[in-house]
View (cartoon, one colour):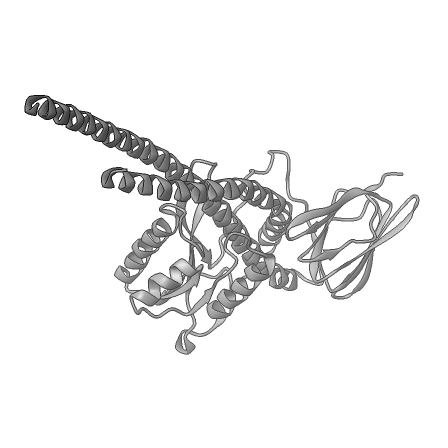
Length: 299
Length: 89
């Protein structure tokens, strides 16, 4: 076997091995993305009940809560960047990071100081490599976030928000995450988490669905006090779940195109290897013919 | 007699949904019993047990802190974690 052919055979084998890996990752992501979507759906009754309750309190009482009060002079803003722990998910993490860089640039242009909070090893790596400071990091769960993690993040952000500016507190909290639109579309998105604006969930309430005049137990202020941090946590949880579903969907897509590319490469190398084999055979034949011609001439 | 529509919701799923005659939960101020026809109410719950009584008997779930809303005989009990292991569907 000629040297050329051996090189091609080696390449084909190596691409085949890669293809097996990418195909396996594609299948794993495909099965997990279904579960992730289901988790997004399962968390919605909680979010809906909470949103309804919070808007009920907000509508029927004129309570000002620190978490809903706008600061007149915003000097420092926290940005929570939700990326993945692992790569091989196409542009998933980099587009979130790009979006966060844009947001941070805008905030700085407005004269605000920016405090980053990071979710996912990719964001941590991005900041460490550039030797930038960040306030806190959470890693190791991005494809399967639990409610406990959301609560931890929520508590940290609310604590930072409640702190005085002089002690390092922030006046605003933004979240950059990837919104899961459907299996083929996931877009990076920015929401301002704090101060809170109560928004209705995905479904708008029906026309005749008027909020009743609630009684509060023990009092409107205390109910709001208990509900708002939970509301923050629920929204963060929802962001994490959507980000997880998006991560898996983009991984599935990235791995699908990697597998397709591998197939393409294998086809190309197989053709080249065949060509090399034919060239070798042709050469051998012409050598034999040339040899026998020379023998015939000599005799 | 009308009955209550009860929903028991945890952070990551809807735990239970069904009809009941009475719901008893522990709020910040103390035990609270809800019967059909109760006025709309939003209450903060503390860690403890929620009892849901229906015709056949009563069922108990333990929750960590959460809240409860009553609106036109629809009771929604919301908590971050709900242990309803001894619930029958």
